[in-house]
Image 1: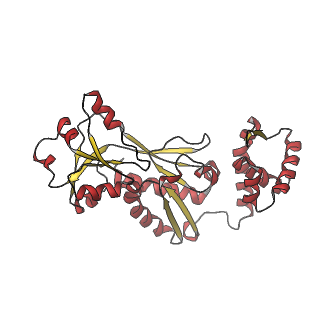
Image 2 (image 1 turned 90 degrees about the vertical axis):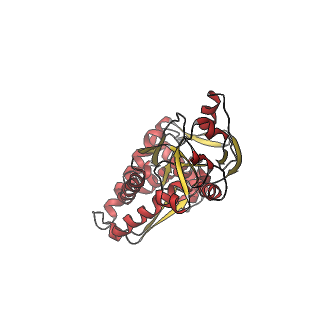
Image 3 (image 1 turned 90 degrees about the horizontal axis):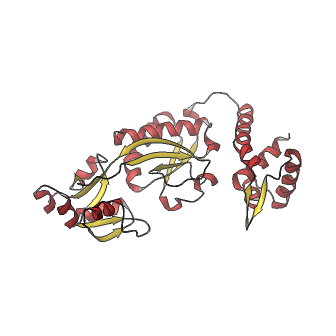
Length: 298
């Protein structure tokens, strides 16, 4: 089969759209439509079928998606000068989606690690504003890092660490004058952290089981703003146990265990299978995993 046909097929199976596939390939939708007709005849399957305003892959297309991507990568490797991977020659940017709390604990270690081996590699961190969307599938993000939510079915994942939530308040907070039990914890004013203004979460459910509730006096969109607000007020914020201890102390904050039976947070990373076998991407994922496990102790 013509290699160009495979490239068009790969773009169609990744985008599920003739228009977006044409944009990716730098050609016209009409040209992609003609190639799709050739592919349908060659494969003996419609591959993409209309569903409302969009298109969805057939079972045969789903079977082919990873195979076609792997075949193209193999062809590219054959045609690329030099068979071995050497990070020192890698010139590339990787995009990571993570919360500000996670990137604060990872970015420094990650940058130091990768620049020792690959001085021409850059890292771009994005907030979770594209969470729940097709960021990995569309290639806007190389790796999603943190507590992974719902993902597209083909996405690959790797667990990295289990973390627990801790409370954090300014060092002179009245809470530290005695034992922090569940009633004293609930009675304190709290800072909620949510990009969408969400006020309630697992802590509130656990308190409700005990007939208690807390007052969330303010909701902020990031952990950084929550910690700064906690430093300058008698409000209590949340952080991760043993995460950024030096930064927490430098801000004049102290952490404390939350006196509730809360579930641990499963941290992991996710990436699209188109990058699974790419040596540069795999090298970057290995360093990212090591950076997470370093500060977390997971």
